[in-house]
Each structure stands twice: as structure tokens, then as C-alpha cells.
Length: 372
Ligand code: CO8
Image (tube, rainbow, N blue to C red):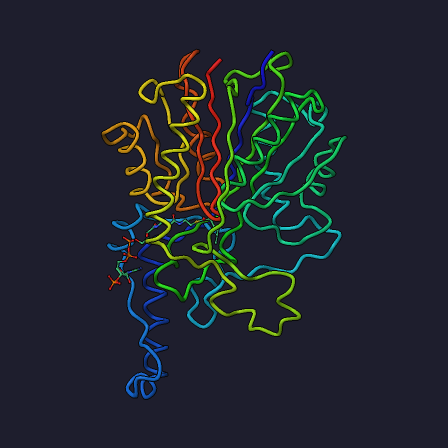
């Protein structure tokens, strides 16, 4: 018997923001800032805010639009952050709600019910609270016996969660695992920063991992192998956390939100990811050229092109390495799983593909899959 991914679910928010809408809002905010601080800018005490353009965003990233859980407030130049209603403790929390929606779709695609699952992992870039775990809230809402816990691994949360699920099934300690990635990134986006205001979108993905002996899915994949690696870097960072209350810092300051040294990240992470994939495939005796599909992390189109060029010696086709960035933007750990969810049914039995994430930490995770 083998460990299989037997189902995948994708929940997409109803609301979205195009580059044009985003840029119009940012530029109006920058204009207002510059006129309110005209004297100080004139005296050279503060820098004028530069303007953003939709053309730059598309060219530099491949992003045309992004989904958002709550559009209210994010484009309001007197607010520049989404607005969410407070929910009382007896109501389902925002993050659990989108996790449950994705999990239900994954269960359906695996042809499974709550009774077939005994472990729930919520793995993503941020959780809205520390405890009780979002995973335990989801477990209760779905009526699952067993246990659940949350994991935070930024962009590699989904692949690292899948690696944990693989181990649990392989060892026989679990019969069925739900790995859920409710990526609510918009609350951490700095909509006042032209270098990063366009990068992220909200989404939730989920996968079901089980033993091949119990698999009843129409489209399932053997997990041949998993590989994770981390290497400490400060180039992608958010300093917001539970200590913010006692360090007396401004909770709204830019360093409390997502910020990065994008060029350094680009330069350092692309070779790391390419090398990681190559080594992982070689350790399984698989030639890079024989891969039918690359479900790559969706951070930046130019990163993915560079990685495929390093590995293949040419650009990967859209069929080989599907792109969801244009529509979804960077959704932290969910990007490679969205690509997998949308583009896996056409593969034939025996076809091999790789899911690979790379990002903050740095963290890189990959799974080699074979269509059953
Ligand atoms: N409009 C117009 N001009 C702009 C804009 C804009 N919006 N933004 C920047 N510019 C300017 C720059 O200021 C720069 O001007 P100058 O040359 O005068 O300095 C010029 O355009 C070119 O800028 P860059 O060289 O920085 O542009 P790049 O071509 O390098 O593109 C990118 C910038 C898109 C950021 C690119 O470097 C990149 O994608 N790098 C990889 C970064 C990456 O993948 N990061 C992933 C982080 S995600 C992650 O790890 C998960 C974290 C957890 C989730 C967080 C959720 C909130």
C-alpha cells in the first residue's frame, strides 16, 4: 500500500481587486499624503510617496487581480486596511469559516466523510489567534473524531503540513488526514507600500491524505516522497505578534506588516528552489525532463520561469507549469495547491509531477506525486 492524496478543495472569496482598482486607491492615498506633508517634503524631512502603476505590477509579478475576503476598507484611502466584523466566541471564526468551506470540498473530491478523518492540520502563514487552535474549531464543526493542531510555516505551510500528513499515514498512526490552508493574507498587507501592496490575495485550500487501501477517489496520486528544508533569512519578515502589546511599539508600523527585500529574495530563493527540486527528484531516480507537471509556488511569474529555465534549459509551458498568479496573486502557502486543484485531472496513470513551495523562513517543501 502507499500514501495517497485523494482529494483537494479550493475555496475562492467572492470579492476581488484588480490592479487598476488597487493602483487608483494607492495613488489617491499617496497624493493626499504628499499634499498633507508638502512642507516637510519640501524641506527634505520626509520622502514623497511614489506612485504605483498597473503596468509595473503585471510585468514585475504576473499578477492582474487578487481575491479578498473583505474588500470593505482596503481601498478606502482614509483606512487602507480591510474591515472585518468582530465575531463573538460562540460564532464560527473568520478563518475557520473559510477552512471549513475548503475542507468540505476536499472531502467531497476524495469521496470521504468526517468519519474517515482522524487528524486535522490547519497550516498557513498566520492564524487569527493562538488558542483554541483553528484546527480544533474546524474539527468540531465537521464532526471529526481524533485530533487537530495549527502549524505556521509561511509560504511552505501547505507542503510542510502535507509532509506531516504523509508521515502520519505512512506510520499507520492516522487513517485519514485533512490538511487545510486558510490563507487570510489581506490583514497583513501594507496597502500604503507601493512595493508590496499588490502581492497578496486571500484563499483557502485543503487536501485529503490517506492510505491507498481506503482510497475511493476518481483522481488520486501516490506520494512517492517528501522533502523539506529551512534556512534562516530576515529578507521576508513580519514583526507583529503577541509581544506587540507589551513592547509598546506602534502596532500599525510598517515592520509589523509583511515586508521584504524582494530583489534579494528573488536572487537567493530561485537557485535554492531549483536545486532542491533537482536533488529531490534525483534521490528518487527521476529525471527532471520526465516530469509531466510542476505545481509550483505562486509568488512571481518571473521566479517560476527562472526556476524552470534552470531545470529544463528552457521555459516550461503553461501545461507543464500552470499559472494561477494572474487571477489569485500570491496566496502564501496555498498557491501550489490551487495550481494542483485546478490542473490535475487531465494527467494519465503513471504521470509524475512535483508540488513545490518556497518563501519566507526561508522554507522550501516538495512532494513527488504519481497519478494512480
Ligand atoms: N509601481 C511602480 N513602480 C514600482 C512599484 C509599483 N507598484 N513597486 C516598485 N516599483 C519600482 C521600484 O521602486 C524600483 O524603482 P528603482 O529602480 O528606482 O529602485 C523599480 O520599480 C523596480 O523595482 P524592483 O527591482 O524591486 O522590481 P522587481 O522587478 O525586483 O520586482 C518584486 C519586485 C515583484 C517584489 C520581485 O522582486 C519579487 O517578486 N521578488 C520575489 C519576492 C517573493 O517571492 N516574495 C515572496 C514573499 S511571500 C512569502 O514568503 C510568504 C510570506 C507570508 C505571507 C504574507 C502575507 C501578507
